[in-house]
Length: 597
Image (cartoon, rainbow, N blue to C red; front, side):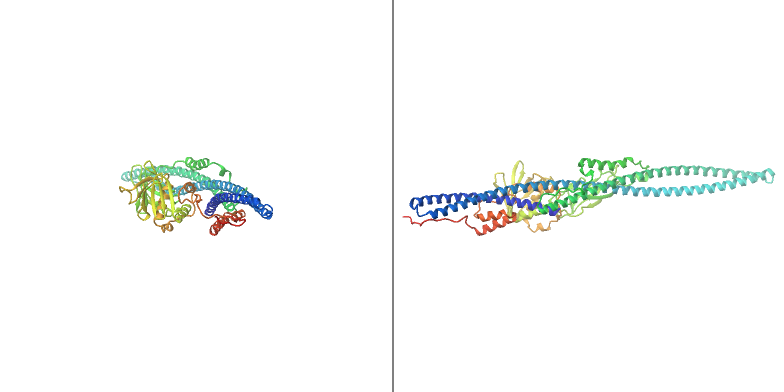
């Protein structure tokens, strides 16, 4: 993808250079035609003079003049035809570039949608794994309850056996009582023993009834857990299907990107979409429909699953804690990082978030944070403190970004080009209600008003820039400012503010450009903002046209060389012509030169 973006940028650059060269060639050609016309006028006057003086002797000279005029007119016609063909070629190339840009934007959007679906599926899979762990714990509790019930059953069986033995003894005692073999005192003792045995039997029967009711509740709980497990398995199957669809979407987008890269390398129109790599039917749905499908798939199993049984009082009094915490998002300047957390005994909305850049605390207090130019090269981390419904706070947890904040490759390339050119201008900044222009050259930073008048200027080594908490505001500390104090400015957007900060840092210390981490690819939002910013006018802009006030004039041989070559040959021939400084054409002289008296 990076090579394809570089190829597009190089192709756009070559087109712009070709257009500039065509405009320059056209101006030079018009000047050449003007000079040719002047030469023709001189030649015609010379011919008339020669005809009046020597009409009979100069037929051969007239023939030479006419042949020269014919050659010049043929050369003019060829040059006009060349200009027309070049205009048609440029228009065709512009259409091809526009179509390829449109196809690339579509493929990027589809790939982003596939990534979002895959991310949602992975999050739901993590939730499923957590549910399975909870289910394993409940199953363990159920096994313990079943073992306790089996022990109670064994105890009840032993009690029943003892009761039967006592009843047999009572029967024997009754027989002895009927036979009169025992005394009355022994009968009273045996009667008391029978009452004790009966009370013990009643207690054992009550305990057995309680155990049976507990076992029935455990069986009902186990059936509820089985139903929940079935619902979770159905949810897992649906999410697996969604994940397979997302993988198909990613595979189709990668194949499409590969086809676009091959088309860009061949410098031809993009190939038609292959039928074998067509994504499934869901790929052609709108992003809103796909997001609704994912939300419905995530919400349906939760609604279908039966509610969990009430937890014991010890679980309700559990201290709030963070179950899992991950910093999501792309750690690239201008992108948004988000804290993806799940809690135990706490709520996402009531918990607190604190973002840090190294040891420095950032002003962001929400679950997301947009990176700035000050974050480049630093690692961002978030500290989450869980807060329960009763406002109790748990143990804070920390999560770091996947890597230090990097700079997009396109931004790094443009800042390097501006530093190589030694100048750059930023328009549209505001100081209160007044517009300000920032002009950077190889030695100084100048702040100008709308008319171009310089208000303050300083060398780069003493200029200091600070970003405000406002996403658009920044402060410029310049010692030469009258009255002291910083300049409080606002940029049109956050991306331009970050670009200004990076450019000021690079012009102050050119070696800092090599220490910036570079992201391998650029997101579509960064590419769009950068394309909008770099197409604005200003000194040092690579897209601005070249100056027409130059002493190097290409010859007609350069125009002929441009016909069969590409943009690189045009640049090479123009540079060679500037080194040669060849004259536009031959000068004709007829007759003898006479001294002025």
